[in-house]
Length: 168
Image 1 (cartoon, rainbow, N blue to C red):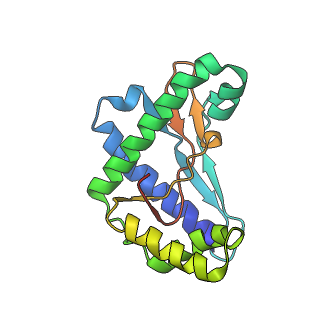
Image 2: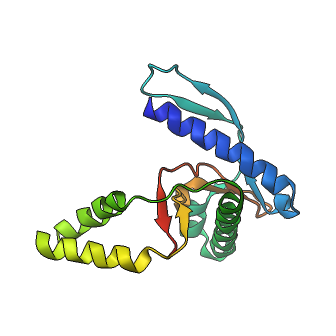
């Protein structure tokens, strides 16, 4: 199922990136929540990842309840995300983005703003502008997917996502 494929992709990337992190001195600043097991079989639409428990605050909660503590944690999460992008870009092949995917995603938004002729022209102009921009894997890196330990160490909970995006 799609849920199982997503979890397997997340587990594989986490394993790869954990190894890359272990080869640096950044392990005291960053980490990943370990995958322990996965429930469900190939026919199960609701596969679930079972992960090792880690004690800490969700980044979003920290930002809302204690902005003074949350800002350095947010800076850490951004640095960690840069580490993830740099190591995946260097070691793992990044699929070439397809123009039709970009047209669909940008087109969805533009449908509510402009007519179809203008939309097609704008999508083509945009694609021309970003066609030379570096491409990165898309991430589900919102503030609910980062856990901050009491030491300030930032843990990535779930960075699995599908597809690529141009930088910026």
